[in-house]
Image 1 (tube, helix red, strand yellow):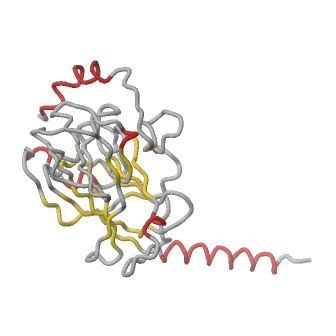
Image 2 (cartoon, rainbow, N blue to C red):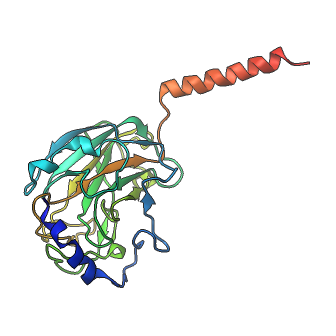
Image 3 (cartoon, one colour):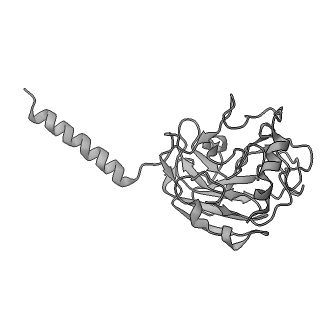
Length: 256
């Protein structure tokens, strides 16, 4: 069992009433938060497969089941796959993600509160070979310890900003103009765990701190990836087209 779960009550006591003071969006449920609940009707599909699951360190076998990240988010502490310290996984999709209006997809982790955030980089690819990372920023000033907390208003552009049941959203428009990336045909999303010991950096070169060390299921615990903007599958396009033709035919048939 993951060590951190034995300290849930202790962490909740020490983080109760925490004042978030950073410049970025606050925790789920607060005014201005970008968190998206797993039951939000904006989700049109979910990851359907996985590849390149590279298990990091400090992960018990119980948590090494990548299939648990397929499908709709469950929103519990246990129905997840752990990446381990420095691990990674690439999720695939039956219908490619496209760059539409607003956010295009969201990553779900399993944090049990608003501050125990095990962070990860997010990268996307349209060919499965060339991956491109979202810009990110971390303003956490120093190490937080194995059972410490991260102020969500101090981080942006990283997976696991929000507690379980709430997705961290990403907008493909932020990657517009990158050569070799088709924003309307994103078939791969890679999550890479960040080890919070001060060795990993954000886009501007600042250190990213998150709870360290943890054990048992260390690192990002991926629940799911939900899609808000997806490329219609050919079958769906055919059905829509045939339905329109049928309607036109009926209109002509019964035209007075």
